[in-house]
Image 1 (cartoon, helix red, strand yellow):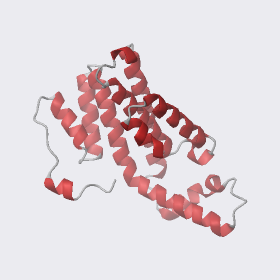
Image 2 (image 1 turned 90 degrees about the vertical axis):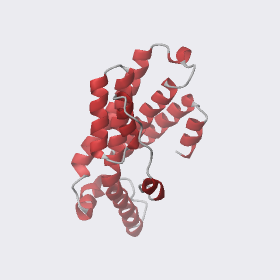
Image 3 (image 1 turned 180 degrees about the vertical axis):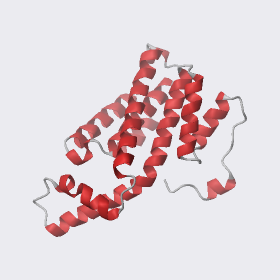
Length: 204
């Protein structure tokens, strides 16, 4: 994961996609992570990488068929949307004790070589991650809807694009990217980040 930003900044998209395939392969070997929000993050990152590549100047030869390329981005982002929704349905309303009871079985599977105290530490950390994800995944879901809106705009499906941006803003009202993409679509002025947003940005 530490390599992801470097590859993206250097526009090494072949490396980006190979890296995400490798990470997903690791997650897929564990029942607990196979359908987790981390995999949803990967699929949205894939969509974002496809869009970044698509919007690079002079990339027409690289892309080939625009419709096929945007379809790949849409398939990835829709998978992220489905996984986020399913995860929030399963975990979004649980308290700490309920999360612990819900995940203990499959999360601790295969960790018999560790002491009970170590297993409890691992479980405590995972519960903390899930509690944080209960908030963060609404924002992540908002970002996925923003990416879907961008895809729909490039597909010239403007009503669908606007609906995606509105859904993104409804999920996270501080999603300035979604708001300004909607402003572009409606030929409105762009909104700049306010001074309070600059001084006190969201935690994530």
